[in-house]
Length: 233
Image (cartoon, rainbow, N blue to C red; front, side, top):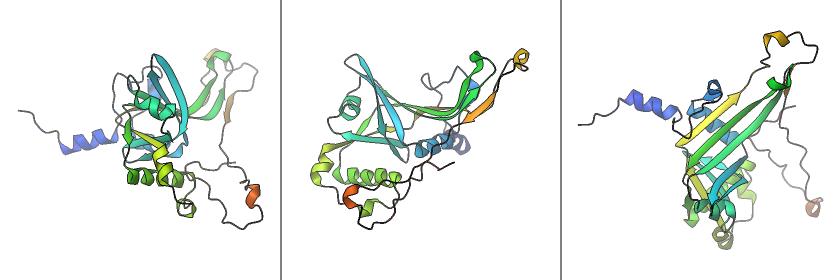
């Protein structure tokens, strides 16, 4: 008779990423991040993901916006677009990739040049969101990620728009995260080589909003920046 796993063990499993044939990091394994919360935080901070799938023997990778709700990653598009219709009919699991560049690592040799980065890969079978009320809930989730407080200010979504928009989701059950956040790793014999070495940091910064010319004379509340990308200078 099977025995039930101790509650502590189940809780620990819920906090760590699964290790499967697809998610096991072999090259640079020391850069693997196992904490599930770190992955969820990075997904929430990111605006773009890349949805990769194979259909009719052809691999496609399509960039798109995404958002998260609980244990699922969501994306949307026109109901007939490849990132919706194609991904839903994919011959195997889709692979969703997220990545950000945090710095260029400039070493004393070309071989040891590298990058500081954060990246996540998610595998899964897409599920379609079809209920109109549920779709409108996720429209709001997406818009609020782009600009908190904006949804109630917008013209309401029509039934036609709801029907024309497809939403897919993948459960975050099979995923991996890899991070490099370090300095140069030169060979000992190169340490005195006369060239600048170090890290050139990369920061994402929002620019000044450019209001639509058609309403330039109208007074509107200032646009709220997305919270998912911290402004840095």
